[in-house]
Length: 425
Image (tube, rainbow, N blue to C red; front, side):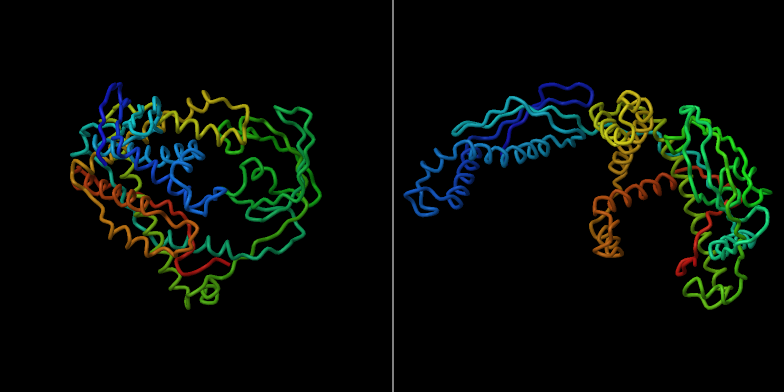
């Protein structure tokens, strides 16, 4: 499409464009809109589709004008962006729209564009690569966790011990924000293992007998994930109701078969080791990527488009307001804007590095990845997401190839997972 566009104002990444399309495009859009109405509506005295154009245009003047403008305007806008070779990152703000028959279409649009910068300081980075060795002990720890998942619970008539699963009734007797609180919580289960239960309960409950009560006070940190508890001091009265002992299955071939497609415990160990090695590699690569992002961003402190930041903060504020209506936008901005700035800087730097180094992802590569996902999968990624992920990995690989990498042996802190091909019972 033949359009004329000129930039009338530049301020940071903000651009004001004046865009003009020829009268011939306006008249064509109006004629197409009128023809659509002509074929769809019935006018008294005329057969359907046979009413004169003048009658159609007069009777549906407003509708035809609106439809034609809504059709033509985005196409003219896109043509203007292509002509200038710029990529907007904020919603366009339109003004001064002129759209009349027989005259050129003209409008003014204010946008913020993707920062056009030369990224430096991404070659020769000093990176640390963590090297993990999966030991037999790590494999046995993972196997023990699978046995924990497959354990049976057997009620016992004794005092509670570590590793038991207990059922308690709780009554809130003090709340620093609601001193007169009298909330009750029945049949609360605690697994008396480190990392499974809050330390205060883990210290108090072992040694209690069924029917016994005890006071437990908890000082929840401000960073507590539950906003109802964050920053509070809460005291509970805890009554022990039931004690169940966990009996773990033996690590034998019978247990292996209960996990799925395994015919021996040695096959389970092999699968566990492979999974731990894969997780170790993922953890190592993630740490390298974090270093790359941090150093590239530190070396390229350009301004992020303010409109883009505003759009992001507004969207976060809207989501948080559902759970916390009293939280104002300024508080959200102070909490989330610093991390958003860093993320946007990396996103823009990634795009520019790929362009500067001619790193590309083909449509065929994207389609091959997409083939591995079922068509009806709820979490099936879009082609754009796959493209972005492949391109980011390509940029990481390039930067690593240009970097000074030091291997650092580390002790594995395994994320215990079910072996591939099996299922925990």
